[in-house]
Image 1 (tube, rainbow, N blue to C red):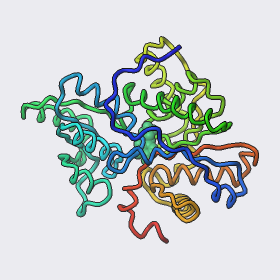
Image 2 (image 1 turned 90 degrees about the vertical axis):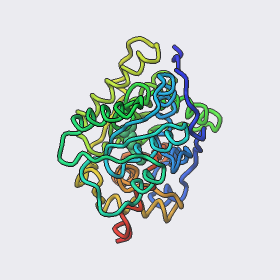
Image 3 (image 1 turned 120 degrees about the horizontal axis):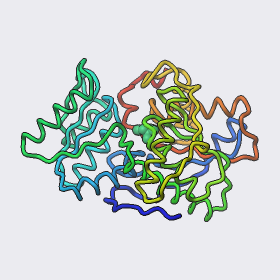
Image 4 (image 1 turned 135 degrees about the horizontal axis):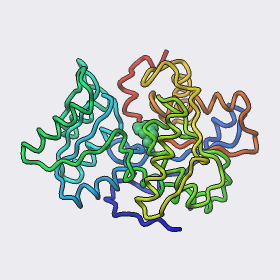
Length: 326
Ligand SMILES: *Cc1c(COP(=O)(O)O)cnc(C)c1O
């Protein structure tokens, strides 16, 4: 079965590189390690939301919308990439961020302003209520808003990662890699949902393990599987369940979303100093900390190949300052 992909608005530099992590692999005495560089998608700092936004922007433009609205945490990479996509396509953009505005703008928050987005804050109010108000306000100003959900994780966004799996299959066939595991950060679930469906469609034989950033494994697993099934329908594939392909590990939640602990700090420093590659404190730092731990307790053999899918987020490093160095 071939998916019937809707139109995309080109935003990403594709294919993203697939590279070995030889020094990290040697240092850990672990399996062969590869990295898929979706931190290099090229949209104002890059990251996994760029692939999702290619389908989301095409739909927004097809509907005649001229204003993007989305939501997230203050250091949301999704919000920053959405602001950049809006600017690139000549749309205006409003971001509804959690909580109160901080005293200083750093990291993604600074970039949002630079990219021309309008920033709004939920304060102590429920996000859905504040969002409905913002949508009404934007309409009243004579604009036609297109609302993108948290993390861009709906069927349109997830389609970006179905296509990413096709891209990866081409790269591993050309390089004759045999990948046993893919390790990827999973939060709002769209990335993992797309990959799981793509794995099914393009016969990827390895296992995909989502490292949960902020949710219990059972909840995230159901969320990912449901979105994958909805995405299959969206792509004209009928009813498909990939529940057996959705694996979530919630051993690395640490002290909660966005809290930099020793494992994340060690992972960020290790990648920087052994490979010259920047991770982010919230998602890829936590996920790499999980991978390091899995390697240390012997989850993989030396003969196996593990692909770490870098989902971006490096602008958030600047919001953590010297806490990264301790
Ligand atoms: C959003 C994000 C993720 C999580 O992707 P989901 O599709 O929300 O699960 C992972 N890494 C980074 C850097 C992100 O910004």
